[in-house]
Image (cartoon, rainbow, N blue to C red; front, side, top):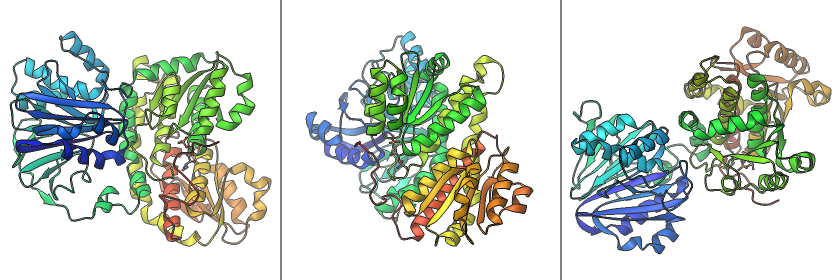
Length: 603
Ligand code: M6R
């Protein structure tokens, strides 16, 4: 997830050290490239490259950069590979504007084509540059700077925050759509950033602009205007009193809880990105023509691959083979060839087991594509192309938001495989998936205190089961993995129908068994519930509300009504929360469970 920071002061200063420190404070968001620009009278000094803040800032001597306004940006590649030219900030055609953004402009490709046709100099693939040219376009047409920015806002689709400045002026302008952005007011300076932690060491007096507003920053004041009519908005500054640690966690006690709550927003951003991605069509075409289709991954990413294969069969009528990466080497690699397609799924893009499987597949000529969160990681470079998961940095070791975005990507691809897209003019449309973020929010609102109460009740157990069927089977596996990972209890995920083939003998009075039920599987789940209840188990069901379930289970954690394909995805949210509460109640740190590491780069 990229980060931006802009700084305005009233005289020419040595801004380099301020920009370097601000960039360092943004690094927790994750990045692959670093850049800084200062505006000094009629000159823009722009320095940037791929690499870490420490390396790039020393190599290009950021410390000596001077000016009265400065911008720094950390880039997490989405549009365009990590490279010096794609790094931010960017200048306009004749070099008198400089700007940088974070987030994604989903109509980047169309806008770039328009700018080239309009005769502008487009240097990179990056959508940050697109933001700059969007303003340049209206300046070329004779608009005042502020009006050019207002019009650019209307052209830029997606979720992003953007800061821009022009030579021979004394201001920076900033606006946002969907993403976060905070403005700071200090003694003799103002600043703007993607987030609060990068501002707090400078000032605690802040303004929070909303979508549809433009902020003008002078050294001694800021002004907020409406994009719609350009009118001034009376936005009062507030004083932040929380500690830095609390602010970094977004006010949540743990990163895991913060990341669980980020899921609706990252889902929204992902759906926008997929809609605007030319690579989706290309991947869909390759998968349609494949002889065999493999989804290869480990851990949580494997559970996403598993639900992906259920979606592909149920929605697109296309079989896909989900397989754990090391087992792919033993079971399928010897038999694959150039007619086959593999999608390698990994949050980190660095999991050695996945990279080994990729190597085995490529040595047989198999076409390989990726699905990864960390762009610039080995997986993204080693595959023909990689779809980004668009989650930003996931700090907590247990994967949460990256899992749900992996599942949404598979669901989206399954819709496209089925030809259910507006461009085909027939069938259902991927537009239906736009309900997901709101449904996730509704789920989080609904489950809160009930899940915490259940966690308290069952927390004495060190052994339990989590069962599902069809698309909820991978969700049950994922819930069980989360529980094991952060509560250190044993929880087995299993196909609900398999339970009677052995594990039923483990049931004793009060033994907790969680069922995750899809809307079409209620009768089957009821029979499973009764099987365990008559033997004394406590049956907890996660499903859409249904009187038949209420009549049979001990607890029903009710999900909002949704499409039968979306409902399983919602079912993972209570399981994430259940694991989280149980972990905290046991006195563990869910962010950093013992013996585990976020990225497993060993065999
Ligand atoms: O980075 P990856 O998605 O390739 O990682 C795979 C697993 O190590 C990972 O999903 C692990 O299972 C999670 N920590 C579970 O929460």
